[in-house]
Image: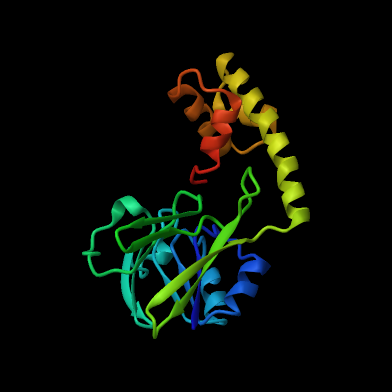
Length: 224
């Protein structure tokens, strides 16, 4: 039996639970948006790391490939950050690893598993911080996948509080936009960064009739 820790979208944050899970595995797959080279270096202290470049990974990640095809423990893997960007021939692939959406997903297409481990970086606006561990049986050529929740109860409570705060912020930002205020003014009035204010306004203006919950749902998968 061989175990692989599968993570994505750390966005510069490496959680203790991720490290703990990785310490029980023989390899780590990172599906991009690491956020910093330090994340990769820390993981390499634990096990061999296989990583692809995500859309937020800047010039420092120029040497990291956008896609990666590899064979490990008798299985063929293909890795890419955004599933829409698959370019390689995946006909002989057993497992495809991807990220980007921050949403955990296991989906089969024929005998091929498409696995998105979700995001195990910052908690964002909902307590859904996940990764996966793949257990491989080389002799039988079978595998199983375990979904891991990386956020503890106290952290989940803090995230729920943040969610309540964000509900008020989104509601107030929407009102400020309706009042014709500029992004810089909206950000200052609500005590948030201009980048977040701009994203809320963009979603609000491009989705007619959207409510506060709808904006929050879209922010939860928005690349910050």
